[in-house]
Length: 345
Image 1: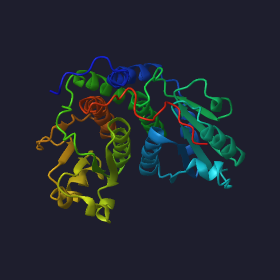
Image 2: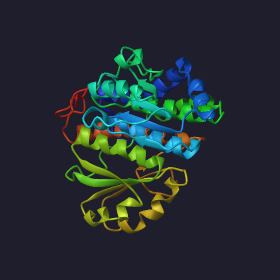
Image 3: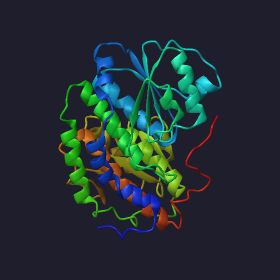
């Protein structure tokens, strides 16, 4: 059992609401998954492009893995500047372009959406804002439906974005029982909500390190890395457990934080094996795992469906990182230099 949670934090309150928000999402989800499934199943789409920034780009990376792994669709994350600054031209007539944005208001994403449609793309907006200007012209709108997220740091909107992506994939695979699994997940998380990780485990004086994973876990590790930077001012960089061997491992030494994240898919289950050598290079190794044999303090209880494990990890991680931020004397409700909607165009 971790330290008593701080009661007066907006971002913590939103993070702890994730189990409840998942339950409400399933009850109220009216997004038109079948229309997208038909596009893909009828071979009207050859590839997928994502356009996003920040946490939403971590969701886009998750989408890339899921669409490639399960649907065999090549997926490319397009930097908005390719459109807005470089003014590059593409034939998107066989492309499905996802614009992922909590606010749906960033000027560069609005401009990208307009231009990719002119290039022939079918577009999908995934957003938590019913008033996004993109909705008026997008081919499809998928509502995150998380309720207003007031905090700068995204938590509940990220998790629900992953669920939308998961439902898109499994509806296309004609596995319509996905809702039942998500309902069970909500119950699982509600029961586990009081069993939080301890924020006092880490050395607060060390501010650099890596988080190592693979496959879908690597997409999740990107979001974890972003939260370390955003809320804790720590440079915890994400790496594939394969890629870290190609040079970055030379930075690892004692007093260097090394997190490893293992999921139960094929890629995730090889992370521990991949990391055996580099773990021995530091005295600060922290393992995020489902493995009952591990003596880690960052253990999570799995769901019956392995594809839902990333949600469980995030539901444990978000309250923990927020409380760890408090332990460092920082204010996660007001991250330094940051605003809710970032303008980069």
